[in-house]
Image (cartoon, rainbow, N blue to C red):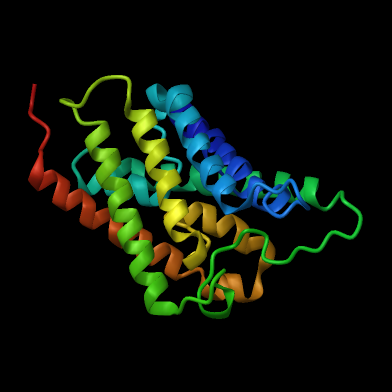
Length: 229
């Protein structure tokens, strides 16, 4: 239960910090942080949580990460569903906090609410195939970094930095394409509020990240399997 509570709060912080920066600060007149700032914010949420709860739950914060770690032989199948439920609840709680804050401003309009999309809902107009490829590849590389940084032979104490910087880089690359998901829980939490098109396109932001994560788990397990001690 402690692991699940940790995953709840960790994913809550991921959405609040990452999506919150996009909704509340990215386009602020003159002082807006822009998509570079949002990219850094997402990276910082993961970096901080790795050190805060990594020793409790492993700091997955993401159904794709949980499934990818299972594919890589690092996680028990019996814990996958409980972890994903905790992550979805935490992400939704984070989105609720963002909404409560954002709606307190005069003239508030929900708009895209940092939801992920493709086609006319892609920030720069990228189509379905481009979005699919982007999400699979970005999640694949994210899991490769996670699996490598947390390997038993990796330098100790630096995993949080590597993982946080990887997520920042991923956002710098892919925000224009899909608004960057690589995380089904993050995508679901925002789509719940936007509804309509966001819920209709949500399938891609489950299928693509999970596919990329499973592929990474298989590849990394082949490249550098954990040695039994």
